[in-house]
Each structure stands twice: as structure tokens, then as C-alpha cells.
Image 1 (tube, one colour):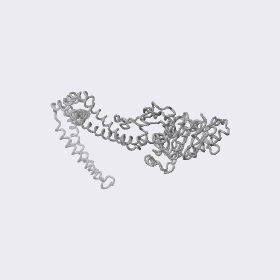
Image 2: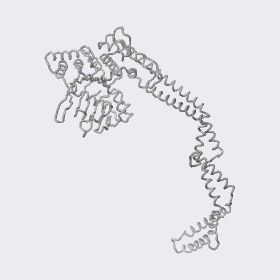
Image 3: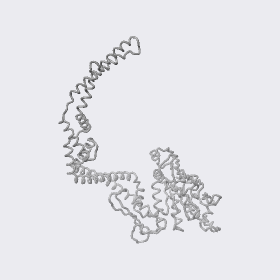
Amino acid sequence: MLSRLYISNYALIEELDIAFDPGFTIITGETGAGKSIILGALTLLLGGKADARAVRNPERKIVVEATFDIAGYALEGFFKDNDIDYDERECIVRREVSATGRSRAFVNDSPVNVGDLKEFTTRLVDIHSQHSNMLLATPNFQLAILDSLAHNDRLLAAYGEAYRTMLNAQRELSNMRNTLEKSRAEEDYINFQLEQFHELNLHENEDDELETLQHKLSNVNSLKDALWTVDNLLNNEEQSVINHLKNVEAQLAYTESVIDDTKGMAQRVADSIIDLKDIALSVSHIQDSLTLDPDLLERTNERLGLIYALERKHNVASVNQLIELQHDFENRLASITHGDEEIARLEAECDKLKATATALAGDLRAARKAAAQAFVAQFIPLVAGLGVKNIAFDIEFSSTDLAPNGADAVEFMMAFNKNQALMPVRDTASGGEISRVMLCIKSIVAQSMNLPTIIFDEVDTGVSGDIATMIGEMMASIASAIQVIAITHLPQVAACATSHMKVYKSDNEQGTLTGVASLTGDEHVMEIARMLSGKDLDAAAINNARSLINQSTKQ
């Protein structure tokens, strides 16, 4: 339950720190006093849209912080999944908004994104306003009511996963069909291209190898001259490099006996002589192997010409890229050849996934119908107790194609007059009737979901007299199981509360401010008397207020 709400620098609120009690709390105040501002701050805390225009003082940020008692509500999983410190009794939720509109959210001082904040706080607080009454006419809302009563969370999650998997497989099948159709239209073109690739029979890096061979064959004479020069420098008996090094070796060997620093140098030169002799022998063999081969050069040039032409045709720069393109053509041709087999496999997979989703949708329907039957039985006497004596109610089911929330369409069918045919609720209920219907629905859903706190925002608009008293008594009845906070203008509702808060406006040097006062005892009585008679209080109004309070305490 909500035990504390702190609001700072929000609209007309400079700073408020409000403590809430369990049970039934009502909030009253004149129109414009700031009740909607408090509710707006709470909506922001629960993940609502941040609006920089609500910042009172641009030099400070908005801070809205709430403390919740979460004992017994099985919320530990959220804290574990989001790596947040868990206290089995207390949880602190905070939202901050800067003058630039930048927003931050925290749960137990750990940062969370707004999506996670919304998901978490929907399990703590439900705010129901007059605007929510319009939701009753929407099929998705009606379906959500049944899912809440049936506790279909896990089943909906399983179905949702199966449905998304099915859609992904169907998209893959559709893409495969489109690709195959397009490829078949290009089959002759692909075969023609592959014939050219197969005729060339390319291998990796072939262009580099051929270009190296071409350069070698084109420059045989200059290469032989270069190798002859190397051979002459190494092997000339009088002036060869090797003979000069032999002299170096001898001189170094002579110095080693007296100069320690030259030790080992002679051997290093000797090793170099061995390497140079080996090089000289290799150069001689290479020189002998170099011969003019015009035919090989012609074949090499011709092969390179074919490769270059194919590279230009396909706008690539190397043989390796041509080979990749060849593999792509081969894969496309294989997909055409085996396309029907792949499509048949995907069709079978889609049928299997659809069967799984259909079975889960059937489980959802069965759970919803069972919940609907229990809901109708509970709802009729509850709404009849609010003065709708001739209420008739049923829930119609119809099957649809598989959709994100199953394969069901539901329609709440109601009649508010005797012998009246059942009609969709959107076509038959008045504003006052809708308010009472939604109050009863919220009563059933809130207690079924074991929701910690429900807030009613002027849902009693349009009713008065005995009906107003009945609504107050129903809210008090709900409050025996969960915390109820109601914003109301009706004294009959206010009289049923166990806690009373009054919102008021005051002026100071900074401007107009919204404040909240907790009313007890005579203050509670006097406020209800004012709600009954306006500003001109008299003994009759006060006595009437006491009578209303006494009546409610006897219920």
C-alpha cells in the first residue's frame, strides 16, 4: 500500500509530504484547489509522461517520491530481474524531472527506465478516473478484465511467444516464396553466367599468380642479365665478393689471439661465405632455367584478358571476388533447385507453430469463459446493490483469427431496464450507470488481483442521494481488503472514509500554493457539513454530517 507521498517543485506545489493510512482515504477540496495536481504528480511517479512545464522553479528539479509497503505482494522477482536491492516490507519509488524536461526514475535508489517503472508500479497502484469509464466500451479492455480475473499472465506470455514465433516463420515463408519466384524468373540468366565461370575454372589468387608469371616471361632477358651480374660478382676468381670475404676472414682470425673484442667475428664471416656460395649456386640454376617461351606468354596474356573482361563485366577487382560471385550464383541456383523442398519444410513448420498457438488460444478461451461465468455471477448483485435494480448482464464470445491477445472477441452485453434486450454496453448505459458499472468492475478486479492500492478520481460524478451512499459503502467495503484512496465531491462518500484529507490553496509572497491538511474528529465533521451546505454552516448541516458519519460506521 501507499504509505507516503512526497512532492516538490511541481506546478502549484512547493513541497508536500503526505502520509497515508490503510483502509479508505478520501481527498476533498474545492474545484481548482489542486486535487488534480496531486494526482498528476502521482501519475508522473507511476511512469506518466514528463512535462517540463510542470516545473515550478526552473532552478530546481521536480521530485516525486512514494514509499510503499509491499509485504505479501510477491514482487521479489522484479527486484531480482533488475538487480535492485530488495526489502520485503518497504519500497521507495522516485521520479525526477529537470527544467529541460530530462527525466530520471529510481526504485530503491537504483536507476530504472520508464518502461520498467510502469511495469512495476502497475502492480502497486491502479488509478481509475472518469476517463477510464470510456474504456469499458472497448473490446480490448473487456478482454483485459477477463484475463485479470482469470490470472492469465503466464498463459498470455506463453501464447504471445508462440504467436510471435509463428509470425516470424510465416514471414520467412513469404520471403522464401518471393525470393524463389524472383530467382526462377532469372534462372536462365544465372545459368548463362555460371557457364562463363565454369569455363574459366578460376582458383583463388589466380590473377596475382598470372600477373607475376606475365612479368617474368616479359622480362626474361633483363632478368638473366641481372642474375649474370650477381653470379659474376660472387664467383669472379680475382675480384669476387667471396674472395674478398675470405681475406676478411683471415685477417680477423689473426687478430682474435690478441684482441678479445674480435673473437667470433671470423666465424661469422665464414658463415656468410657459406650463405653467399649457396646463393651463387641458386642464382646459377635460376639463370639456366630462364628461357624465352612466347607460347606460354601468349597463353598467360590470353588468360588474364579473359579474367579482366569478366571482372569488368561484374564490376569487381579480383579473382577472389569473382569466385564469391560464382558461389552466390551457385547458391541461388541451388535454392531454385531445392526451393520447393525448403518451402514445404517451412510450410510444415508454420502449420506446427500455428497449431501450438491455436491450442494456447484455446486454453485462453477456456480460462476466459470460466472467469466470465464467475464474473457475471458476482457482478449482477454488486451493481444491483448500487440502485441498478433491473440489471441484466452477459458476456458474448466470438472467435477471430489468431491475434496478439488470442483468438477471442468479447462483448459486454447489458440491459438496465426490465424486459430490455441485452445490448453492447456502449449502446445502452448512461453516464451515471457507466460510473457504477465501472466501480463494481474495479471492485471485483482489484480484489481478485490482490492489488495493494486503488485510487478513484471523482468516479462518483453524476450520482447523488442514496446511490452516493451506496458508492461510498462499496468503496469502504473494497477498503477492507485493499487500500482505497478516493477524490470526491460527495459528502455521502466522504462520510464512509476512515481517513480524510483536504486540499486547499493559499497565497504567499512567492504566489499561490497547494497544501494538504489531514482532518480528524470535528474537522472531518465540519468539512462534510460544508460539502452538504456550502460556506453557510448551520446546526442542521453539522447534525446531518454527524448522521452520515454515524450511518457509515454502522455498516
